[in-house]
Image (cartoon, rainbow, N blue to C red; front, side, top):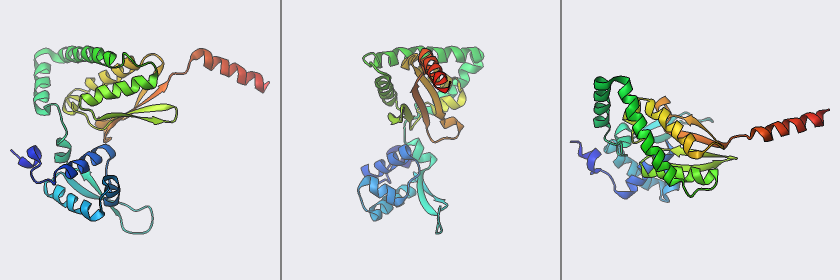
Amino acid sequence: MNSTRQNFDNSPGAAGERVLVLLKTHGPMGTAALAGRLGISSEAVRQLVAKLQQAELLEGRLEPSTQAGRPRQLWTLTAHGHARFPDAHGQLTAELLDGVRALFGEEGLDRLIARREANSRTAYARACADARTLGERAVALAAARDAEGYMARVERDGRDWLLIEDHCPICVAAQNCQGFCRSELKLFRETLGAEAEVQREQHLLAGARRCVYRIGKRADPAAKAKRARTTADRQR
């Protein structure tokens, strides 16, 4: 077995782990940006990066400069680097899903997804039981998802909230059957309630580096109609 992936034997320890987490949660970053985030010198970052490259956990790529000058060097995770984050036993999951499909067909897969959805619905409802506002429910849902390994958090974006998931512990299962992704979006909408409008803006399986959901308050039809009448009256 590859001891690099299993034990991080060739890594510089906790500092190296912090570099990997930063690249996982923020995407490709340059040496100076990493140094600023870590609070260490650029030279120290270069030493960390060299060890992580040797361990095949990250790689460099050039980003064209927006101004005259040389392209900028950015660091990003390799497939081995991404594999350090939990994947809920991806290979076994894929084999089990293939077995379900072979034995019970697509209907069997749908029943499996429905069972998982029901369990998650109960868990998320429990997590959000004490939340009184949409924002509180979003934060509670993110905490529940984070506990499941999604590296989830909530950020405010104007009047909306962004539910950001930097990792997908069921990525192999979702690639094998995208019904899991449809089920999760449905669950988010149910958990956050009728006042919430939830849209997926970034999708890992569509080529994004993470999944991002925009959560906003659904416009009240009566209030919307009233505003429209007011605007019409003013224009007369």
